[in-house]
Amino acid sequence: MDKKIAQVSGLKVGGFVIFDGKACKITDMQISKTGKHGHAKARISAVGIIDGSKTIKVYPGHDKVEVPIIEKEGAQILSIQGDSANVMDTKTYETFDLKIPSDLKGTVKEGDTITYWIIIGQKVMMKGR
Image (cartoon, rainbow, N blue to C red):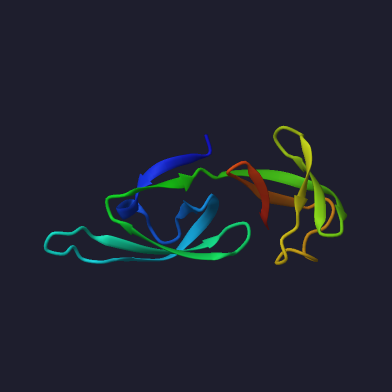
């Protein structure tokens, strides 16, 4: 299971949410006051973790949304070819390829230990340990 259900009013800035099937990090959240016969509305601004796309959604405060469960793992870089790195998981010794993000290009090298996240079935390289 890589996602759970949460109430919109329980989300926080810096937390994560799934918009249009993409895992996003919440950058801004504004909650309006309730009207005479209405409900509070939440305006959520978020940025995609993998692709960096910006999304803004408006939900009633009592609605439920999906929140990704993010697993954080460690790996060692075995080799680098272009913008891809072959890495080995430090727990299971499984080897696989990860795309090197633009902010880490040139800073990672063979033998380095990195952190990668498993988000909705996708593995994404993050900062080094």
